[in-house]
Image 1 (cartoon, protein in one colour):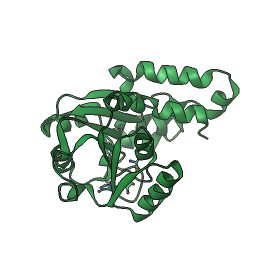
Image 2: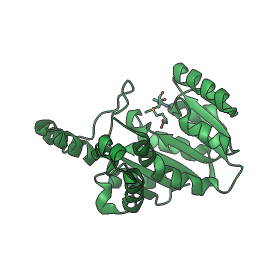
Image 3: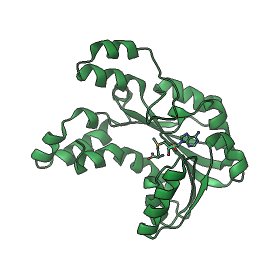
Image 4: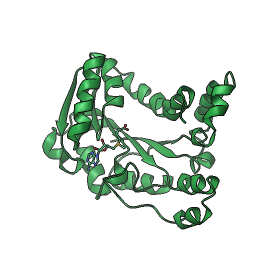
Amino acid sequence: MVGPASLLARTAVVWDALDEVLAAGGCDVLDIGGGTGVSAVRIAEQGHRVTVVDPSPDALAALGRRAAEAGAEITSQQGDLADLVDLVAADSFDLVLCHGVLEVVDDIPAALAAIGTVLRPGGALSLLVAQQHAAVVSRALAGHFGQARELLDDPGVPDGRHRSGRRFTVEGITRLLLDAGYAAPQVHGVRVFTDLVPGSLLDAEAGAGQGLLDLERAVAGRPEYQVLAAQLHLLARR
Ligand SMILES: C[S@@+](CC[C@H](N)C(=O)[O-])C[C@H]1O[C@@H](n2cnc3c(N)ncnc32)[C@H](O)[C@@H]1O
């Protein structure tokens, strides 16, 4: 079970990086595949102009409710990453979030190129993707050794119906970004230890949640731990 300390540790590394970009103030932000708007509302609450594009009408309805409850103004549009350049103007965003979406997209080079088109020069792409090697570790820790072995060299398949699909390595996703014309990205491992620590331990021990948070922040930028991370966060400038 995921408790509040765990929830904070799951997302802190991503928000540390985003907050640095957003510190410029008054940013135009696109959240592609923004879903129910957890990130979008948080960013809009800081005074930035936020647009969400997502193919799911249910997700957009939930986003509308979330934004209304928060009193946040968000522009939302139903649409697919594959059609992005027809949906929003070129060179119009300072920051594009693409979190948990590349796993299910068919043509990744085309998707990264489309995002590059709508970013302003010098704008930043925030990419959050599932990390390949963590899938092997989690299966092995659960005692599913055969499954772990099968996953060793299996990057997954894109699957729009499920949360997971394709998985990425640091080298693979970095190469895709460079080939699409982005500058070398900042790479952070996300959820290096958080998914491996029992929630009961965090709830039982005073200060354990903060300790885990500090540890996640300390290892996020260290390549030797990124192979354990459930997700990779990449911040790439156009
Ligand atoms: C795992 S959820 C992530 C939601 C949100 N970005 C977050 O991090 O909480 C994936 C989202 O991508 C959307 N999605 C799936 N295929 C897409 C596509 N081809 N183009 C844009 N969004 C897509 C889904 O509707 C869903 O809202």
